Length: 53
Image 1 (tube, helix red, strand yellow):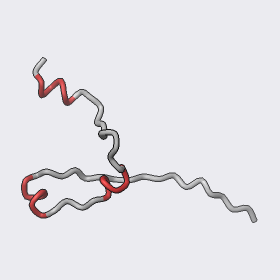
Image 2 (cartoon, helix red, strand yellow; image 1 turned 90 degrees about the vertical axis):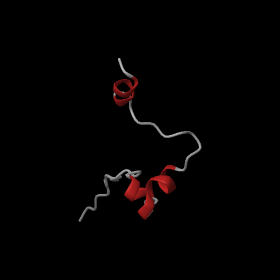
Image 3 (cartoon, one colour; image 1 turned 180 degrees about the horizontal axis):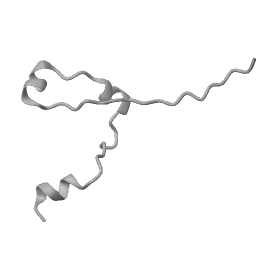
């Protein structure tokens, strides 16, 4: 199996020590966008707060 195909089957990971919230919410610079060096990040959250009347 080629290295490119092998790496595509692996789950994405983040290196230890990286502040996930800070790193993932940082905007790409125009230069990074021009070079295609960015990833679109979507954050989903589940709000289970219920109010009773």
